[in-house]
Image (cartoon, rainbow, N blue to C red; front, side, top):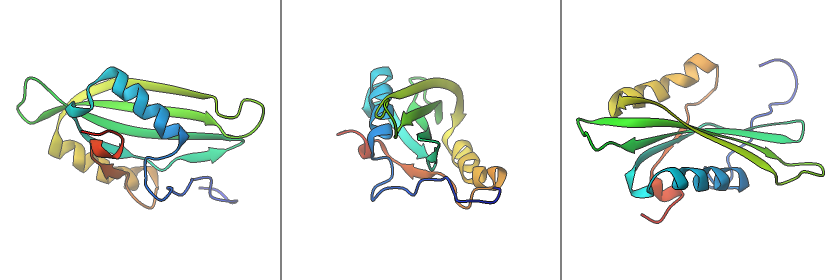
Length: 131
C-alpha cells in the first residue's frame, strides 16, 4: 500500500458482524439453505471516501459429494457517510467447484498474493445463522 492511513477496517469484536455483513448474510440465505454452507472466508473490509467494501468466499456442500464444494463470492458496498448512509449493494456469484482442501490452501495463500498481512478469517455458518 502507498503512503497514508490504512483504509482496512479492523474487524469488530466478532468478524462477519455489522450492517454490511448482515446484508451479505441475507443475500446468501436467499440463495441457499444455511445448512448447506460449509465454510465462510471473510476478507478484511476496506473503508474509503464514505464507503465500505467487503468480500466473503462462501462454500456450499454439493449433492454430488466427492469432497467438492460449490464456491461463491459475496461482495458488498455500504455507504457509511452522507445522505445515502446505510444504502448497500450486494453481489453474490457462483464462481466454481473445488475440493475443500484445495480451496483452504488457496485462501491461505491469498495474503501472500495480495500483499495483506493476514489471510481471510475462516468461519462456519453459525457465524451468521442458527444451524
